[in-house]
Image (cartoon, rainbow, N blue to C red; front, side, top):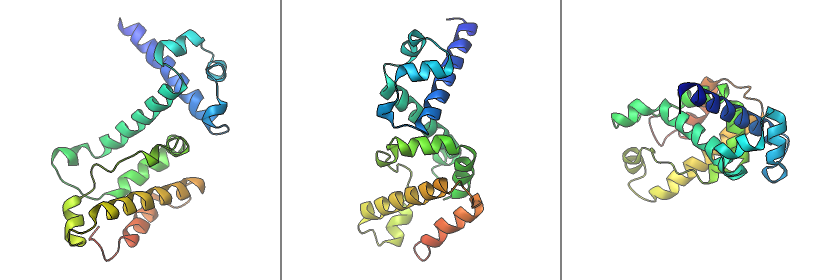
Length: 176
């Protein structure tokens, strides 16, 4: 495919994803149709189906894009096998991309997300290498709950304040 067609396809996909995300703010996934999306972004159904199998495929691709972006935030650390526990970077990203994160949570993807980069060595030290999977789940669930609450409130607190909240919740357990 030539560059012009690639650009056109990418633009169509962006329009479809944007329309889908906007519709999800007012409706549940099972209330949205491909026709709703196509009307909103003024594209044909054939364009939708050329890029996505169905609404669930579209939802999965929206999730994948967000997860890729978050992974890029910590790419250097992953390469160097170093964990800075820099939550401020993530809170800034959340504040700048509130609609995407609301969508992610609304679709329930947070329940499927597995913490792959949790600092297991640090956890083993702080929890005497006991019940680590419980501590990981507690952290994941608590972190998600705090982010959801922050989003629901319109992200009124600054990313710096949210970083302090997370660190204070972990107080006494790590040197975050």
